[in-house]
Image 1: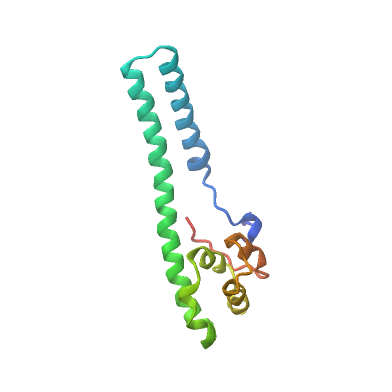
Image 2: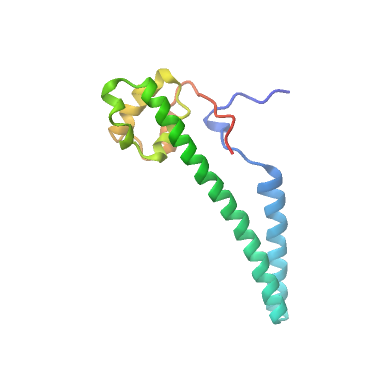
Amino acid sequence: MADAPQSFDNHAKLVPLYHFVTFGILAVCFLWFSYRLVTDFSVDRLFEALFAFSVIMVMFWARVFALGVQDRVIRMEERLRMARVLPDDLRGRIEEIDTEFIIGLRFAPDAELEDLTRRVLNGEFEDRKGVKQAVQSWRADNQRI
């Protein structure tokens, strides 16, 4: 069965093997090593718990770094699209738009981009969530990480 069309309600991407299984296994290991550390302290158990914690941190930072790169690519792609689609008065203000809002604007089709960009520049939105919720005709991003 085909996936439902992307919308604000279902656009967040979860990878079950990464977000639930891998993290779950690491969390259980960390809790077990921590329990053993507290109930029967030894230097070896301290290093087991530290190792388990560091693996969780590696998993967390790997995700954060990948999302950071994705945000930079989205910013570049959307600035190019804005330079092509927006009228002259807004084209000169593209650099004023924070990456947070550009990430929200990527879901707006070309027909809605001008109005939403004006609203962003006028300070009508607090964050990218507000921008995404204002999109009337969702432009899917199926290549997100």
